[in-house]
Image (cartoon, rainbow over all chains, first blue to last red; front, side):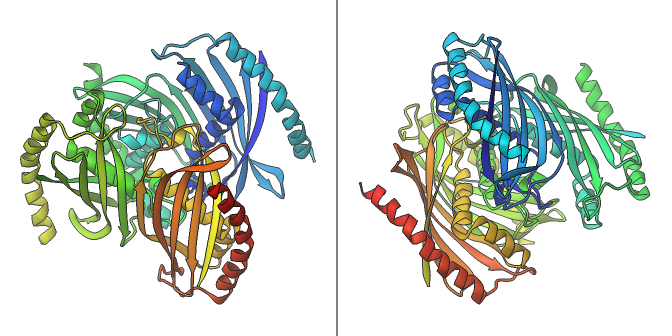
Length: 153
Length: 153
Length: 153
Length: 153
């Protein structure tokens, strides 16, 4: 089992808001997915799809703590636990970024994705995908050390 | 405490799908919200907003069982439990409609919304809102009886 | 060349708005597409897709006259001109519905869609599709007569 | 009259696609808006909004040339023409990015936005906003020179 942590930042645009003036609640599922896509690697994910393996969301849970608004910059922090199982559980949070620091936690949640084959049946994770994730874990670990430092300040 | 049940139907359009060919996973939160809006009453909700009370989602949980696709017709079935508390918990499900019957359960979940005032602070539900919900419960109950019958066939 | 006219109504939900309090501008392209889907027939479109013919938007033009807001009910009125050409030009408008009448014109526009085969190449419209459109034109014409009357009142 | 040019890059995620496997056509209006927001300055726009001036889209025209797909990286190139008039016309294009070069033009279009006051009436552009745009034009010009070079290679 390998744990991969990752952070990616986004702007909040007009398109993200609703009449409350804040981010529309379902959009956090989009931000979480963007986070997972970057964690796995957007290009790798696209190639994996062509090779016959794709992922679907099987379960999602969101807790809303504080609303983001237009003009904000937010960070998606994602932790995925990879094994041979078709299911990959993710722990994910959105944070507000102020002065280059993660400050308020906006939304926290858990999302589980499942690897499917072309017939939409769950598949044990192929060996080479596991290896890819292991190598990626090491690459991303270093990035996250600097993130942790920022969070602890 | 009053329980209100409600059903509303929707088409699945191009806009709802992603490259998997099925409905994009975050859209079910939109369908659930449409269901809650119709349960409470779209117009009443808009007027309530003008009077200074609006709702935000504080918690959402979704379990994905079966995917909907373009051209499908789906039903959102919602159960809300109303009390004086600012929080209203909803139990909600999307079903596939085939031959005018609810067949497969697509997504089930729970969404809690919280009533806020203009300063975005939780407010106990105003007496007249409670009364509105009570009267509405009776109106919708009859509709749901026919739904139950359809489901049981 | 056959002209098909069609009208379909929608609610404006929270999901449709942005922080301005009004409908987010790109959503009218979604409403126009819903209008085209119902004009052609959602199910027929899905079957056509399976048979190897699908449509893409090649050109769109929108003029915004008046904004819709949460709780509104709007109508999409669509006119498509069908021929053997792969291109189908549509003239489309969204109207506000007040007291079951179409009142203010919200957005008017023109959208051209093009029929493509599996290799994403434009295809002349198959004879049976033309025939389907012709039969559909007659069916929808009667519905639109009542719409015209409402608009002229 | 001042011309401001600007470029900003985005990933194409799952959320951006539809069942065709390509980007859903209305999303290009979102990308164009992201481009305009960055051109004007996301934070400046948010502050302007608080001061009582906001923008709405009055007209949009899009020509679709080539589709983007999941995993692509695209650039939005925007040119805005600023004057004292409430209307700001933009010429905008999305390009595919391959090997850090803008290659295929995906969608080209024109979007006009109009400055409104709190009563949603058009307002002549305030003097200090004009000055801000002029100063911004000079800052962005240098960035665009490098973009032009890249495009000409």
